[in-house]
Image 1 (cartoon, rainbow, N blue to C red):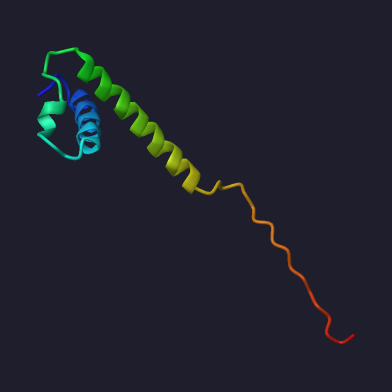
Image 2 (cartoon, rainbow, N blue to C red):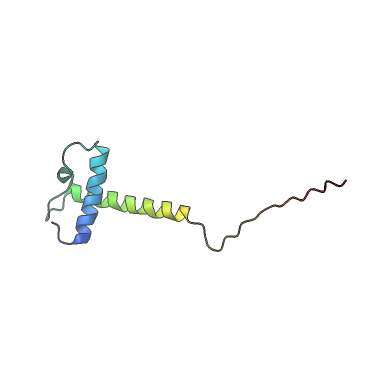
Length: 82
């Protein structure tokens, strides 16, 4: 396992995305770098994880309605007595 749990989580998220993009061919461990390596796989997985986290934050932010936003409703009253 990597040095810390955080590093492992970053590594596994990036490796999973790459593995999924390859159609789940091979093993997920092929997309992960070793515990004490600092190579292109490590940086690739780190950047992919950052992108995934940012996308999740943006999507959650778009789904939430701001608390101070008030709805504007137009009510039309029709007088049928005329």
